[in-house]
Image 1 (cartoon, rainbow, N blue to C red):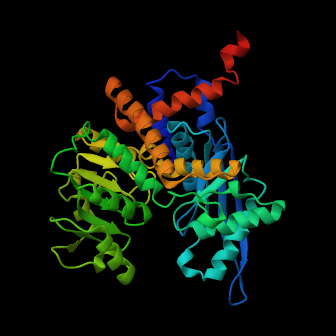
Image 2 (image 1 turned 135 degrees about the vertical axis):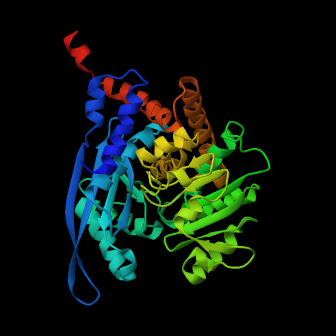
Image 3 (image 1 turned 120 degrees about the horizontal axis):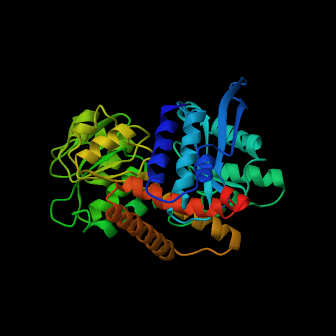
Length: 419
């Protein structure tokens, strides 16, 4: 079994030690309900035809239709998609959303495609998976290297296939096509609300609040912006092409402008900023580290370098199980992905609700609803971890497992049927 999925399932086993759960529940949650693998055949601009492997996984739908993003990435594979769908199952349960977990991907470098080729690929994905997705069955959203325009193309293609407008089939759409206000920074804002709510518990309310952010895409930029505006000092940033540090602090917008012009955060120079390696970035003195890139970025080979007291996982699966053990032994508090980055799926849920009711909320209402959910579930996970003296990740999985267990058991388990 793939290491990524094995690591995810090991966290399920660990959580099961701390809650009462029937063995049938664990049996069901160890396997995906449905996975479809296809080849997307796309006509390229030069007249040639190319095929791209693509997948969609619906991991578990006990609590409702499955929900999860679609990523376009050259390293995607079916094991990754399955693992991401597993994480989404638990993320939705942590946040008490009426969803199960799903995920999709296309193995492609989208930067190598023209805009027209990208549109044809996006529509081909929906053509291939139209029987699997749907507003009441499986609701995709953006993920790595996909965006609102791609979601708009996909929603339009699905509507053409079913011959009626179906905006609720996909979330993360452009605002004029039924998207929701607040979706652009939802992942980061959810993480920010969690930090603010737990600031005293995490001992982050003092004057020394230095932050290092690994990954300067959408989530990384917005968390930097929100924290910077709140008085946190951003002392290190990285993207796929390099990293920079500055003890006096970095201006997130200035770095973003330099990145847009030069292609990397390393294009930002002056004011004490200097380029460093990825390991040097992780070893930068700070109070909080925010992994906001891809999976498995923090592992047993570099976890010992981390000086932060708090890790806020805005990426999916950035810390391996081996690294978890190292960080736990060092007293580092890890706010896990299935809680910390759940602002994205929560606002996606808001978009789905708005699409279905045909009534749209204002930005302040979106933010307030998100804050309430992040604070409520964040406090429950924190209190469970504190009461049982277990890491926050284990507490989050145990919290989700309790909800999933109740839903699965409500259909009946062996004790019910045999009396």
